Amino acid sequence: MSRMVKRAFKYRFYPTDAQAAQLSRTFGCVRLVYNLALQARSQAWTQRQERVGYHATSALLTGWKKTDDLAFLNEVSSVPLQQALRHLQTAYTNFWAKRAEHPSFKSKKRSRRSAEYTTSAFRWRDGALLLAKLSEPLDIVWSRPLPQGCTPSTVTVSQDAAGRWFVSLLCDDVIEQTPATGTVGIDVGLDSLLTLSTGEKITNPRYERAGRQRLVRAQRNLARKQKGSANRAKARVKVARVHARIADRRRDHLHKLTTRLVRDTQTIVIEDLAVRNMVKNHRLARAISDAAWRQLRRMLEYKAAWHGRDLIVVDRWFPSTKLCSVCGALAQHMPLDVREWTCRCGSVHDRDVNAARNILAAGLAVTACGDGVRPQRGSSRRGQSSVKQESPRATKGIPVR
Image (cartoon, rainbow, N blue to C red; front, side):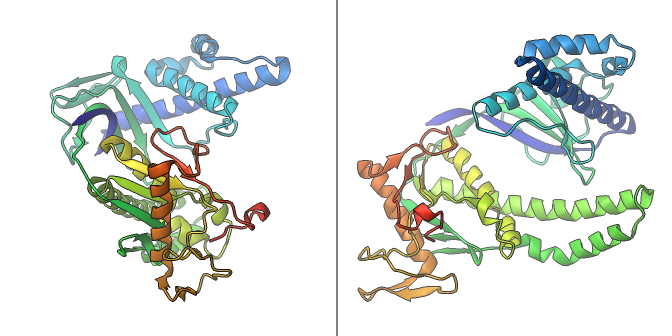
């Protein structure tokens, strides 16, 4: 069995000086158009209580190009500018649906530098990619081949803080859904990144801690440089390269881990965690951010959908750690330093393995009889469900774990 999915393939490329200048100019115009449209829509709402849509901002863009001050917008491809207006429309749609906060202005220093091209603004022929307003194809490093007979429908060019250039090709890909058996419950942690209900523990590589000394030296070197100087700009790039190396290693590890789990298991049960609230603990914030639990869950979500797997999310208030997986007794107190505990039934539990087994049992209750099923909050993905079991402490806003 196979399934057609939209899949993005990201590659690094090395532009010429002329290409880099033109793409940088495009990034700046995209940011400017986005900010001008956001300002126009905000003023229309605050002054006249009027909602301005995409078509109205597109008409404004046509007028901006005819003015003397913004005539330089004609020097870049019009497609990325129109795509910026569509992205703003999507941001407002999510805001009105209460799925996101109000759109904010893009910053020259902090915002992502990117431009999106549709089929009318690029030419794909014999593995060569030529973008509008560029005279030469991009010099792409093909680290992996595109699917056979694949034609990109959207091309996104971006540059990260470390100065690296990337191109992302959105294609229709056919994924073979191989049959799989078995179920697994997953408990995330800091000492062990993942603990499976089978008893397997996957060590947390702690990439940020491994690169901390290099990061400290780069940041100290940056702090010594005078603001606005060329040497400070060079030092900032060095800091960004250290961060990029840490992020790349972490992402690669999570991709390999989630791919293995999805390919080998039919039903995966995880726990819903409020990571945004957990990082408010200043003693654990760095370690939690380094573990990247939210990124791990996001990968599991879309890969499970690709391969036809069942991903079940257990409610965050479910007392997986304090509940005995043998007799079902609930312990009264379970501090974080207790890694093993003995139930009154005589069973000796490893804290993380016991939690993973309880998470799996709660997820299987959903698939078997629909026990305690409710829609997953803040998610519109199909095939996900959640188990909610209230506890006396839940009304106080204190996690049971």
